[in-house]
Amino acid sequence: MLNDLLRWRKEASADEWSRLAALADTTPGYLNLIAYGVRRPSPGKAKKIETASKEFPAIQPVTKESLVFSSQETAA
Image (cartoon, rainbow, N blue to C red):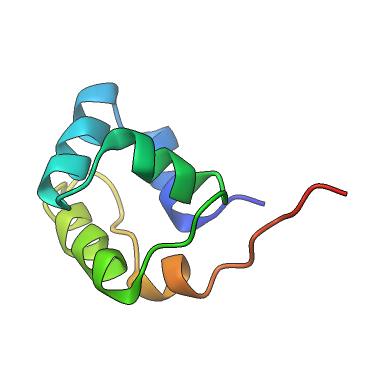
């Protein structure tokens, strides 16, 4: 399942991904955990990611709702 942050990651360059992490006051590694469904961010962190993603006009922003309420896949 492709979540909103993973879509954003695939559209962004490595520099943009690192910049998103810095703007959201987190690390690229933690964003990867969220993007790949390993972790779910707190509502506050989701809001920071949403706000930070709006700084990149060429990429559709991530919504905080998609991060907080996305379903996480589990290994069978």
